[in-house]
Image 1 (tube, one colour):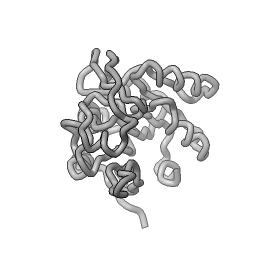
Image 2 (cartoon, one colour; image 1 turned 30 degrees about the vertical axis):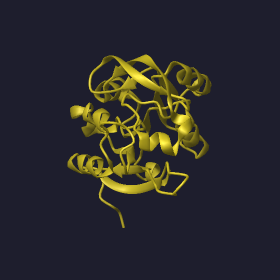
Image 3 (cartoon, helix red, strand yellow; image 1 turned 90 degrees about the horizontal axis):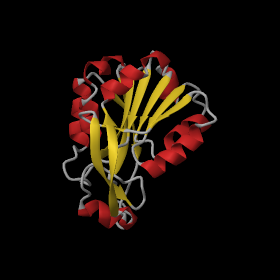
Image 4 (cartoon, rainbow, N blue to C red; image 1 turned 135 degrees about the horizontal axis):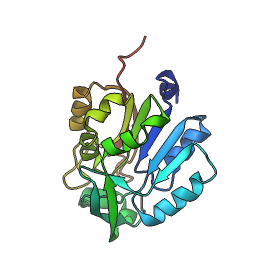
Length: 212
């Protein structure tokens, strides 16, 4: 929250919102700017929309983001949050058996460029949070020239492969550095409960150089 305030963030694109946990936490911590939450799964979106209904600066979109707009098939996990457009690997399932795939669902995809363009009028300093279970690199790449308007980005990044075809943390950091984003915070995420090994982190990046 200090980083968001310090960089004047007035619009958060919450990509992979699930039922609205991230946006709710932002509100609880004092963020009062615009939030636009994207969630492709029907059941999760219904909960998300209900949470946002009484907040006039929180919009919801029933869609995911990806390389191209249109329909796609997502693997639905038993715990919902682990649902992904990519197949789940054994390392993920072994660490979280409740995340096993229970079916598929046809969803709608937009691109990140579309999302940024559609909501550009809401804020001059957008921050993009992407939690897409291994699909982060593809979503980031779909931002194109619109990424030049983005002040900061938060990505979920895996330290070991958890989904087939996902980019790991070093590749994602390299992508962001090429785009001019500087890492400013790392937050531990998903860990293997058996060994304690950290499997995922959230990285927070901004364009500005570190300040003294």
